[in-house]
Amino acid sequence: MRTPFTGQTIENARRALAAQLRSADVEEAELDARILLGAVLGLDLTGLITQAARSLTPAEASQLARYAQRRVVGEPVARILGTKEFWGLPFQLSDATLVPRPDTETVVELALEIFRERPASGRPPRIADIGVGSGAILLALLHEIPDAFGVGTDVSLTALGTAKANATALGLADRSAFIACYYAAALAGPFDLIVSNPPYIPSGDIANLSVEVRDYDPRLALDGGNDGFDAYRALIPQAAELLAPGGALVVEAGQGQARGIETLMAAAALEVERPPKADLAGVLRAVSARKMPP
Image 1 (cartoon, rainbow, N blue to C red):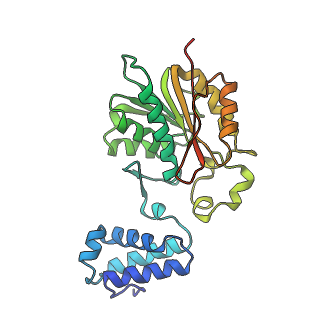
Image 2 (cartoon, one colour):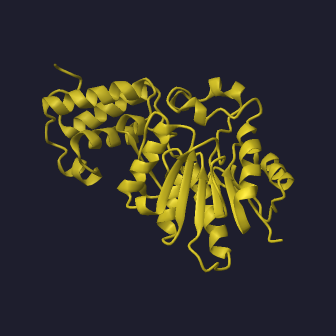
Image 3 (cartoon, rainbow, N blue to C red):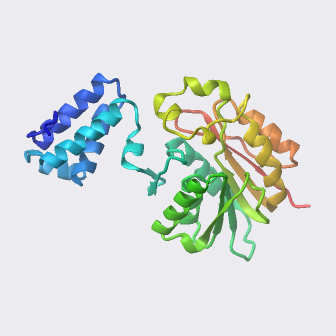
């Protein structure tokens, strides 16, 4: 079957795909074209350049056309390829997991800053990730803290399977466990660090999200209830009970939510010791508090 890319060279196919994506108002058309073409051919940027004059095979042209059609209607590149890099690590995705975003790396950054300030406890540190999804936050932290053990929870068995597969692929299966439960309901402390990127989009705002988020991310991982704070109201008191004295809770926040989250943390007898950490866009993205020793 002939496609728009049949018989084209790699360079011409890249240009044609970028033009097709631009005509569909894809914001990063050039980058997406390069990534999709590279995935079809199994080539990195250097390979695309050095082999630019090679013609696509019919099978390659057909595969690229399928990818192009999916991207034109708004499916994210990460969903098309089934994988996304986070914290420099590759993560497989599933329909039950969010696509890890660079903004969420702010949670990892703040968690590491807080963790590395803590006094040594003389035992391996324990980390919990509430609503673990693909495992991105938890496994990034385990990658950075070699002696830690981590537990991830999720209500979705599919998400837990994805996280477990990612732990295995990253060589972290022996330092992690995954449990199906509502937030932290099945966990027993103490934990030195608890992290979470919970659903925080107000229900009424979901219809106005971008197509890439609204139509392709799982609603369960987006919908934070009428005001966006339902998940925080549930998980913050649970986390406060599970933290070891001196342990910290770090959560991701939506735009304009940081102060409200701090209020909920204080109501759970957690000490808000430092300001929220902003992401690269200036949004106060990571909010933390500590359980003070008695």
